[in-house]
Length: 176
Image 1 (cartoon, one colour):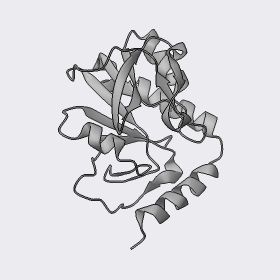
Image 2 (cartoon, one colour):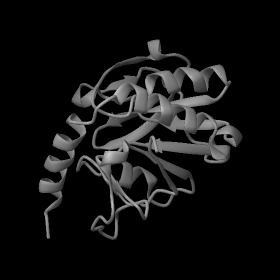
Image 3 (cartoon, one colour):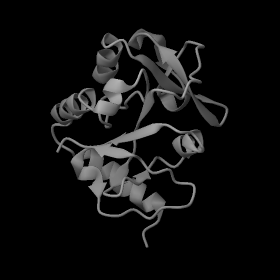
Image 4 (cartoon, one colour):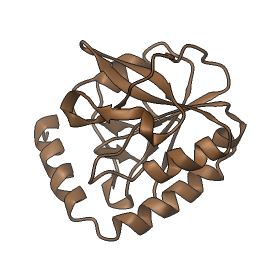
């Protein structure tokens, strides 16, 4: 069996080789903006993308135009919380040099909400391999929230080994 560390290394290399990331990100963004769960949710929790990930900044702007309440993650000690943003100007570099919200309006209302989750790999059963920090698994534990994983098709595999604390997505969206 391949270790998660080796799998992460493989996934990072594979992701760096994905071509047309901008176009594929646009297709994923359009699918999300037409997804019934996103359309009916008032609150959207979403990550702010890093250079190699599915790009989310345009999606965030579109969600704000749709009058959605948008929350992005901030690492507080060893835990992740989500805080509201009203524009991309509400972000500044934080832990791991990832853009984090500067506001203090913490997300607490789990009714009418969806979360869009990053991952290095997803499988066809909606399992996820993250970066190894466990932030999303810890955050999502015991929370009733619709979880959408997004990734490039090249990073969708047949099967991932999972542990009991790994949180499964409700849906995974790729450009295909």
